[in-house]
Image (cartoon, rainbow, N blue to C red; front, side, top):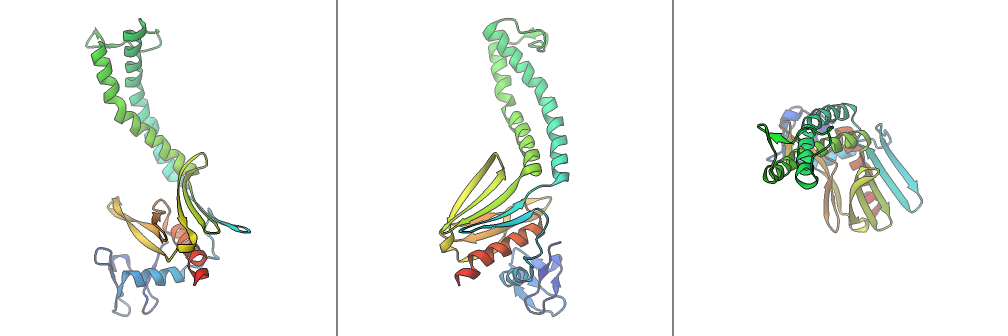
Length: 242
């Protein structure tokens, strides 16, 4: 479980005593008000990187170092799968009607295994078929997104690859993902940040790397894995260069 540490006395700070908007934290133990950046620094130093959380790995391949953390969540995968099956099951009925309407207007009578292309007892015209196809686009995209979320919760991972001055961060599943690159020799800070959006009324934590460009990532990680990855990257990218 993620715990924020008071930079003055080392006590664990209650979450309700942390004001993200004002970037301060109050410690009931010593009664001191601390800057949130100092709290993050104290929390970083309190993370034992030798205690590797499950699903986290570091590979040292000589000149190349890979830091990886899984995004696997069984509950997330089950939840997104149930939603994807429910949503796509309903949308697929209307998609089949749209296909049947296209078949009718472009190639003649559709096969019997397709639903009848009619609206209110009348055969679908080209206009109504086109309208249905356009109308279904956002619903199909939501269904695809739900299925992608299932794959992400099952096989998703974050990989940070350090190869000399070449640094890259890849987020996704083995066959699909996106990569952002940075100059590993120009990293000045590896710190925590928070997302600009909320989930269930709470902001999500992020890892922030300041180099030739600023990269924020890791909001999908749980607190333990995110703290561990941030601490490892700080040791590799900042501590070794100072």
